[in-house]
Figure 1: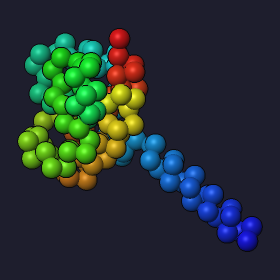
Figure 2: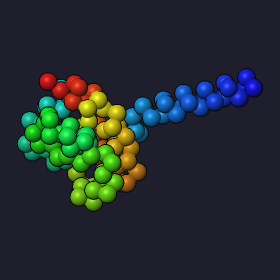
Figure 3: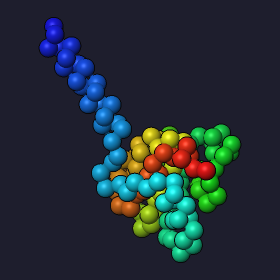
Figure 4: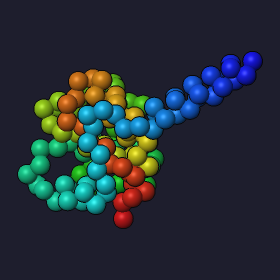
Amino acid sequence: MDILNVSFIALIILFVVWRILPAQGVRQITSAQLKQELKDRNANKQFIDVRTPGEFKGNHIRGFRNIPLDQLMSCSDSLSKEMEVVLICQSGMRSNKASKTLKKLGFEMVTNVKGGMNGWS
């Protein structure tokens, strides 16, 4: 029984760590780096906020388009795979999940804003 309990706990820990780790091949930036990227008017980037419409309406960054995480797969056709996709959410967790989704869908240039809107001032 003890081996089963330890194995179960180890599996739970691995699952939690796997969910938190950034996706492979995804660039991670801070909100300060995001501010610099937003200033670059020549940037060929798509800025996507994956929070709910209510969260987005309450506070968002100019230039970001709202595609809630639960709609990302069905709306991914509206995004160009030829352009970098910069993702943000409230804390960085949903945008990290969104970045994994986009990578699986064949997007090569994906960036996640670490700390999300919580780091934005």
